[in-house]
Image (cartoon, rainbow, N blue to C red):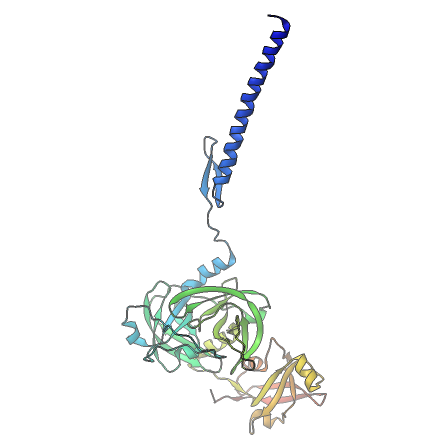
Length: 393
């Protein structure tokens, strides 16, 4: 065999070996591509003791603040059946009738056709004593109730006391209570802060969790003043349930939702309201201690002043409480407060969108003397008033 033939054979052999090598590499690469394409998106790859790769499902992420807050407070949230022993004898889950709800500015809890039971929510605030905070309109007119815990167990509850002005009530159960929640400081809330609502939506869906943000503060809805506004979904049955911060603290008690505007008739979404925790705690503490709320009385009707309203009224101040009327014979009348006065502070505490006149007065009691900073005809006055006790509650 001549040199030329030998060289041809060597070249052919090299081509065969190279082809086999490339084929093996392509197969391995193809296998890896197929494995990657068919592996579930949520699967994680680990190495076993032999070095071979294995596919295992990814673990659920339960580390988020919302998840932890719900785990912490969820067991303390209860469903309240306004029917006492009668309702407790019915082993079925109480429900609200299937019907379209009217679009009212302040939605009360619906009643069933025979008007015997209503469904609301509450939250345990004292595990040892069994105290539960809810809305006054959930328990109004009744003395005994059935409480359904998150696991479906039931207990009988009795009314401790209710306050229609703040729409807060306290009921009490005896025996074992699974958990309790603590109040946070609602004065530290900021617009846009994330919040969580838990409650028995429509009565049928116990411990429903929704999330949203603080959309506004110091709002007024119907006769309720100083409310928190949130876009967390709140439905019938959520009344009395807690509004939480991400630390799992109660920063509000859900009380109302607006579905339709008074003036335009427009249908609204994401307009829920809650009693701030500082108000709820103050009222609850008094109800537990005295069975009622001793509320200081000034004797005025007022409107929270805003920069826009101040411009329309041509006022020299932009924040405060604009007096609309003064009740004859009231402490305000005795102190010579007058219509169109603007109260800007109580004992030096400024009135603004975060602190209403009513909220500042609630830190006092009947018989206290307070100094009001008042602007009248662009002149600032200091007026001392002795507060009386409110009796029209």
